[in-house]
Image 1 (cartoon, rainbow, N blue to C red):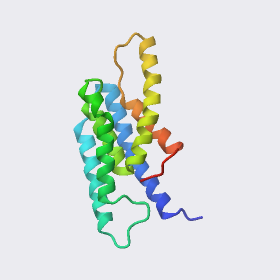
Image 2 (image 1 turned 45 degrees about the vertical axis):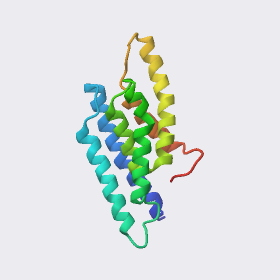
Image 3 (image 1 turned 135 degrees about the horizontal axis):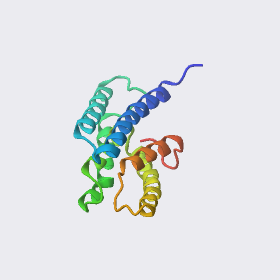
Length: 158
């Protein structure tokens, strides 16, 4: 049985973002930071592929064009920007969510953030029980990505 082209593309996008998220999770747990050498190429590659998709005739089914990818990036960064400005999380976390948006679109990034907020609340309770004042947030983003991939709710992929 052949997999539809749109589904295959979505699986590739999820795999790329999943690899970036896995590396970021390991780095965040070890060093408590998300490196720019990881997020910048993730964003640049997504935007470059979206630009190529925008130029393709006919368009690739299910692929984000450049405006959709850019909107996803901006939404991903802006969702966490208030927390960065308040000092609760680092800019790398916001850029990482921007990677998700650039690859998978604004709707997917919102669901990732929603699931990540649930996971982050649970992780905060664990940190509180351990009497820790802070905890790395990228694992919550990774769980949010998994939640959004496995349980796509509400608004569709944009």
